[in-house]
Amino acid sequence: MTFQEKLKTLRKQKNISQEQMAEKIHVSRQAITKWESGNGLPDIENLIAISGLFNESLDALLSEEKSLMSKHEFLYESRTAYDLDSPKKIDLKIGTAHEVIIEKTMDEKIQLIAASNKLDSLTKQVKVKIVENKRRMDVVVKHSSDLSDSAAYEHLFILVRIPVTFVADIELSARLENLKIRDITFDRIEFDGKTKNVYLTNATGHVEMNTHSNLSLEVTEARGKIDLNQVNAVSKIAFAEGQTYYLKNAGRFTRFVDAASKIIVGKRQTKDPAEPVDFIVELNGWKSEVQVLTDVTRIKDVHL
Image 1 (spheres, rainbow, N blue to C red):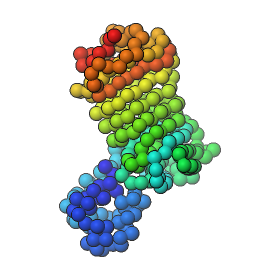
Image 2: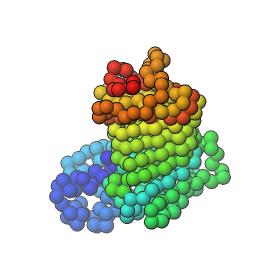
Image 3: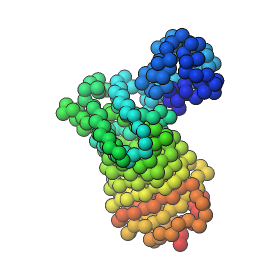
Image 4: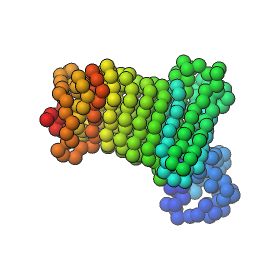
């Protein structure tokens, strides 16, 4: 949970308004609104006052802000926020980056944070352009000519926060090392491009991966479906302990194998699972293989 989400939650749990909170810590109501909307952080004196008011440690209040992306701390950041007033199809064109994280926010703004420890001219080298119409929003990350793809691939991190009220259909195109989809419920996320690692953590929805590169996927406390649309690829997928799943082979010359490379599902099949499961993995495309790195006895209905 981000600082803004924690602040709003703590205030509501204490059943006080923004005005009442502002009086108690001697700031303006506009300051509370600014903090709760993610447009700024309190200074250290106000953080200490908030900590005392809600009996929360500073570490607890700032745990996610201090570990913005997978416990990285960044020297350089550039933030963009844009109001959303209704569900829209969101088209994210990221280009090249080391890592993209997609997660929810309780705010009503879509937020994009570019971060790095090496790109000291980040605010000049990475710009965000947003174009919106009634049904669609295009979010484009543009690199300046002096930012090479190799530097972006090594050192650029992108965090995208989607308002929980308006999460719907997301298209993402990018060239990445890592894609992380976490703490979010969505209708569909479709990825086009290249990435090595995909992490689904506490996420619910339908993911489509349109990439011919070899993938390593990790599924933890996730529900829904992932479509792997691949050609001549060898990928791996790992499930958390206790997750139930169904493997659906819908491609040509495609198959699932276990950790010892023994065939689990080697013939084309398209029927749905007979019993409810947490997750469905559908393999499409041509001449591709997915290795399932978990105990095969937990797989339900893998054969016709």
